[in-house]
Each structure stands twice: as C-alpha cells, then as structure tokens.
Length: 84
Image (cartoon, rainbow, N blue to C red; front, side, top):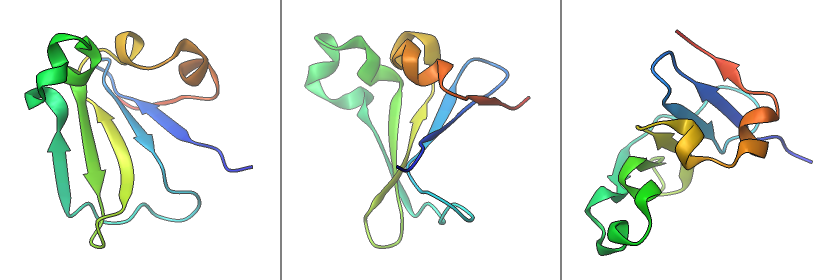
C-alpha cells in the first residue's frame, strides 16, 4: 500500500504529497479553497490549497494554517517529516 507523505514546516503549516516515489512533479497550478462559500461551514477550507501537475492531476495539498487544526491527528502521527 502506498504511503502519503506529510511534511510539517517550522511555522506549523504542512504539505501532503499525493505522489509516491521519486521526485514530486512540477506544480503547474494551484487552487486556494478559502474563497469557496463553504468556508463559513468548514473552517479548515480557509487553510487549504490544492496543487495540480501539468496534466491537471492532483499531486499535493498545502496547509497554509495550523496543520494540527486541519489534518487528522492520525495522519500527523503516522510518520511526519519536519522541515525548518
């Protein structure tokens, strides 16, 4: 089974890589979810950005706010790498 990699940065944000093995692909476009109407009902959307590759495939998820407030604790506990 493939493993999802979560990297938490020094300020508490995170990146969830949805690509297994090798170097991550170049991100060609990103969509911030903070402008969706649903952010009023789901606060975590304010801190999420979807990253897509050249072909429009989802390759990663950026957490621009506190990862602990946005991601499930089990995901953060399952082998997170931390960068400064």
